[in-house]
Amino acid sequence: MRQIEENYEEVLKRHGDLAKDSRGASHLQMASLALASYRTLLPHFAHNRAVTADLIKEPIGAAAADTLNFMSRFVLFLSFDKFAHVSRGLEYLGRDFGKSFETEEHKELGFHSLKVTRCLYNTFFERQGVPDLTRLFCAFDRMWFDHVSPARHGIEFSRPTTLADGAPCCDFVLRRKDRQSSG
Image (cartoon, rainbow, N blue to C red):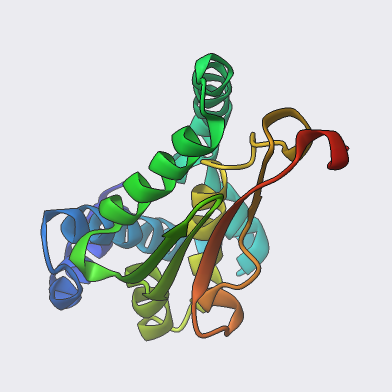
């Protein structure tokens, strides 16, 4: 545990330039802790990167996914305008990123997209030579929308591209769908 703490502090100081505001500082802390844990645990798992990454995925957010999905499904069930509710969630996600991410938002009737063209996590893990760890945080983003069903809610969520996969942006897209034709 001591080694993780020391590694965390060193990494956090070295990459402080990535935190442009308080939200960025929070994201940088999470990325630094994930990296420190990964580096400390990697030798104990025969340098198996996939096994070590899976091990640190739980504390990053996978453990909270079931609770968050239940709460999100419940609130969505109670919502009169389900698209507006999910669209607000996408707006909140964009705000949560803070100034350490660059985003472009586009809204029109029945459509809402958020493009992330600079991601603190992607930049951070690329600098560290472990870009695959970015995907742990990409998975965390998806849990906000995985409960949305075109057939049940009349909303389609997609994220066809990510910076972690080499695309120019992470593209979060919501579209209103006809519930009867999407089953």
